[in-house]
Image (cartoon, rainbow, N blue to C red; front, side, top):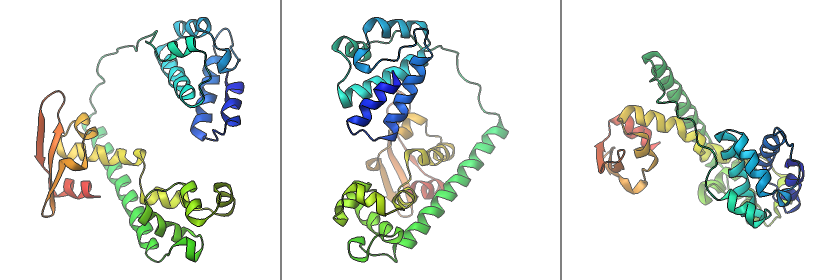
Length: 256
């Protein structure tokens, strides 16, 4: 499945590393099946897909279903019967093994220490890039450099190569061929979802806010009183909204 399915994505201009990686993962899943299906997405049938899912466990079904949904959304290749299956109910269910054992105190302390180290590293990288950007100028005037790119992103936000190229009056391909440094500057100035994990874990440890409360937290739910922040609205499990006055260290972490 993967080889031909992967070529469809590239021919249609996907060029997306995440999509190609997903297609390779789908190839691995289908290639490991007993029937060894290697056709294209358009050749996939309900019988083949149903038999494949019924033989294997939940994670494989979840993974291939997610990849096929994304592929259909982008390219509309699978047939209508297959599309109905892909967007329909699961064939398998996850195994329920009960709650995981809680961390031992030593494990929990180690996790907190690691979060502190990562938060410190990310904060230092961001401050260094902000300081670097202060010496830059508009790259449309001064030419492209990492310093000028950081200057631009401080004013335009976490822009993509295409947006920067348009600002410079270049095509994305020309810009990519000539210039480097945008990814490093962007990652330092605007941490990713992955980079937010140590912040969230540390904030949960210091405040006691449950994970679903943190995941639903919005800027509108934060009120600043002097140098300290008050969380006005977050949901604790299935209960009503709650509020919490943060400690100074939790307030500094939230501000960062």
